[in-house]
Image (cartoon, rainbow, N blue to C red; front, side, top):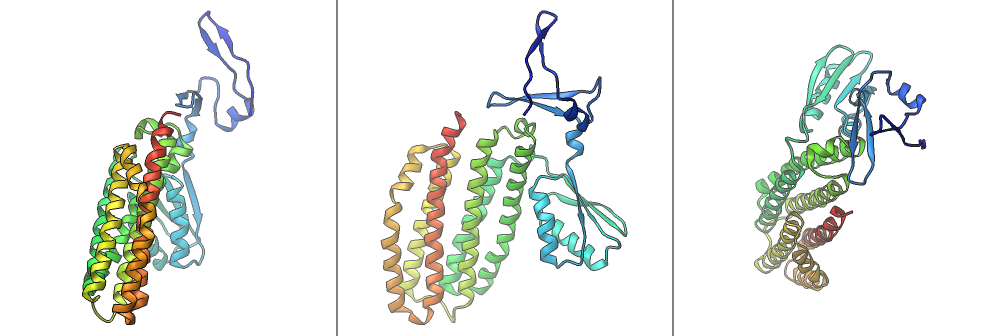
Amino acid sequence: MHTRRVQKTGGSTYFVTMPKQWAESAGIQTGSEVDLIPNDSGALLVVPKSVAEANRCVIDLHDWTFDRLQREIISRYNGGYGIISVRGDRIRPDQRRMVREISQRLLGLEIFEETHQLIVLHSLVNIKDFPVSKTIDRIFDITEAMLTDAVTAFCAHDEELAHDVVERDRDIDRLVMLVARQFSLLLRDLMTEDDCGLSRLQFMHHHEVADQLERVADHAAKISEAALTMAGPAVPDVAKQITERSQGSRDILKMAVNSFINRDTDQANQVLEVRGQQGPLFSKARNLAAKKQPEETSAISIALDSLLRIAEYGFNIAENALDAPVTRHL
C-alpha cells in the first residue's frame, strides 16, 4: 500500500503522484494515458493501457491425459484469460484433437492459430452479449426440463430419455463456466462492471445461483443414471410418490429462482417457511418404496435423495434472494 498526499494545481485540479516502481512495471511513461474508474465502494481505480495486453497465458503441454489437459484449459478459461496458448516441442495429432474437443465444450473459445508447436485459443465472448440475468434464465429453463424428464424416465424406465438428460448436463456446464469466467473478469478488471451493469458483489449472487442450479442439473442426471440401473418401471404407488416429491422440489426451486430474479423477498420467505416440512415427506416416500418395490430400493433411494437435495438447493437460492437486495445497497 502506498500513501500519497492530495495536492492542488491551477486553482481547481487535484492530483497525486504514482509510485515510480509500479509505473515502470506497468509501462507508464511521461505522456502515457491511464483510465480512472470510479467504483460503487467509493474507490478510484487507476488502469494502465497495458492491463488488456496482460490478459493472456501459456500452457506448456506435456504427455497428459484428456482430463488433465481439460482441467488445465478450463482453469484458464474460468480465470478470465482472453488468449490461451498451448505450447509444446511438437504437438501430436491426438493432442490437437483433444484441444479441439475441449474448446468446443467451452462457450466462445475458438482456435485462432495452429503450428507444429503452438495452438492459440481466443475467447470471443463479450460480457455485453451474454447478460448474466439472461444466462441464469437459460440455465434454469434447461435444468427444469432436465428434472421433469429425469423423473419421467425413472418412473417409466425410459432409457432413451434418461440418456438424453445425462447428455444435456454438458449444456449446463458450458453456461455455468461462462458465468464463472465473467465473475473472474469482474474480480480482475473493474472496467467490466460498466459492461455488465452489475457490481462485483451483485454478480457474486448470480454466480452462486448458477452454481446451485448446476448442482440441480447434476442430480437430474443422477436420477437418470439410477433409472438405467432398474430392471423395469417404478410400480404405480412408488411412481406416484416420486412424482409428488419431484413436483414439490420443482415448485420450491421455481419459486426461489423467481424470488431472486424479481428481488421478491416476500416470496423468498414463503419458500423458506416450508423447509422443515420436507424431511417427513421424503421419509414417508422412502418407507412406502421399501415395501412396494424392495428389489429397486437402491435406485429409488438415489432418486429420492436427489430430489430432497434439489429442494435444499432451492432453499439456498431463496436465501440468496434475501441477501442480494442488501448487497445492492452496500
